[in-house]
Image (spheres, rainbow over the protein chains, first blue to last red):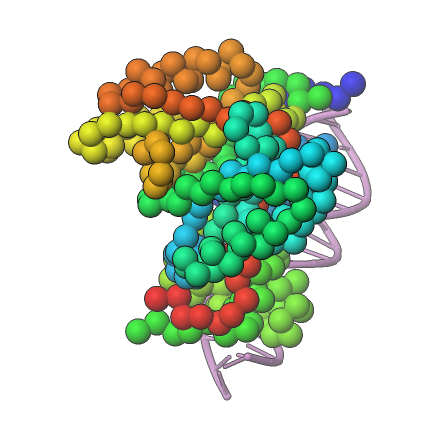
Length: 158
Length: 158
DNA sequence: ATTGAAACAATTACCCG
DNA sequence: CGGGTAATTGTTTCAAT
């Protein structure tokens, strides 16, 4: 059975969620521990796969990705699901793909350059096996966009 | 007028999108440049705010955030929009908030512990000024979830 | 953009509770 | 087993070209 996380682990993770390049000596200062101790905790947290990864996030506007959209897709026949997902994984402008309850079988989050590239992408998606219908909601403004989890408690993550 | 990015900057950014803690000497090796040159490029890329930040991403399942949902909200009266967004920003379980075209005025991406916490969160949201109606799609499985942009070309990002 | 030296940070080995 | 200290190794920054 794995060990539970204590408040120090939580502090480290909370900080790394905000600053993924934070140095170990800074973390050590925050949690009042020595640098090797922090390193050891980080190593364990990574080893347990509690941290999926560290990523730089770019400002999409500055790279001319002017359009964000949520696209609901109806894929019929769950036989087609796997292939659909595989096809989607090869579309780098599709940032997210989830299967969902309710209308539509999947929702995609898309980030693309302009209406033209959106149109092309949508027509590629519509050509995938089993895709019947798509419904798009284009984003006008984004007010919040994070992956940060509000971890607080010292739960035992499996 | 800002300078355009060259292929080396693009390579650095592509790599940092995949490994946000990548060390400068490793980047230097990849792009066949000296470490100080890479450092200087990173400094400039950060200074120009092309990089929004570096973040550790946690495995939400392992922290008992078992539910992801997309929630469409109809906020009526654009007077209420600002206040709505402010309220939403205080809800850490709401990871994203965008205003959108089509039905509903806003879409939220939510990550929460269980159906009970989802219910509580939804009822808080429904109590915000101007919120008429919400529609939720709960995620069954996530097949892709990234913020990585497929930057390829050496566009001039403003 | 590079080099080489100085400053700084991370890792290792070892000891202690 | 988890944390501290000191020495080693590795990384980043700075000055000069």
